[in-house]
Image 1 (spheres, rainbow, N blue to C red):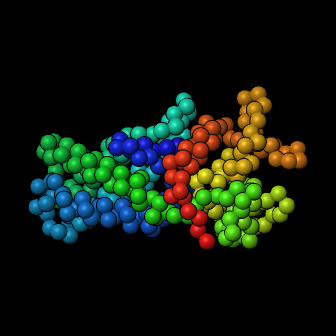
Image 2 (cartoon, rainbow, N blue to C red):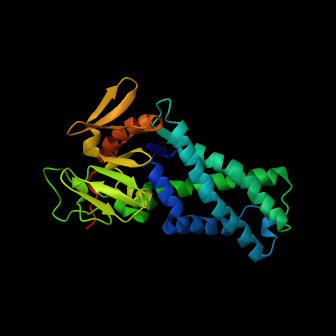
Image 3 (cartoon, one colour):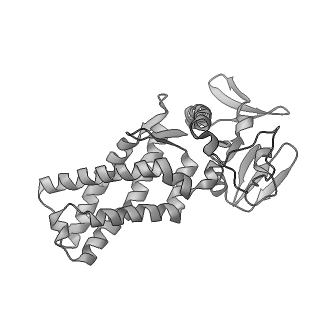
Length: 284
């Protein structure tokens, strides 16, 4: 887990499953396309502006479509590499800048295929800077407001074991209250959801199920295992490896490439509780 930090202050806590969920979310695509429509209306390039309207629309629609996998791809790369030395916060403007460095030549190349050739270097720089400024404004809105509106279930708070919610949120595809769940394990096309006293099979792929969980309630310690926040407190070190003790006498290893992210997640969850506090709400 890492915190994507905007230059104006707000930050967004995210992880691998959440990024993959965005990649599959129609709501996230709609948000990006709305931003693409705004960029189309405010288009700073006189060369592109001189083209027919349907050509302008095609150029910016292509840019919006490619933006999503490139941007989320850089997020996944930095999630693995940036936090290795111990960093928790990733400056969002770095991710956006890297995205535009790849997207801009593709964008201009596609425009050239449609016989709209932007050859003036100054105009190219203007397009890049304009897009960076506009997207920084959009990312501020997304981090500050839109993410919680698009994915309200991810921000649902998890009740404590001593004070369970009167209307518990059940894990998708099961009858198990979320605050009772200790582990979720991949079982082919299905997922095994386990509490201390009961196990059920959810007919949902592991990745989809984990992506729907509130960010503070669990962590994916391995490609096929997710543990609860309460269980994560039973962390032990044995040599160079990190394990989670599960009574009676079992140990789950934390994947080496996820150890730093796991440590950051434990810190981020506590920070998130302080940041959002009363704004966290449960869903029925």
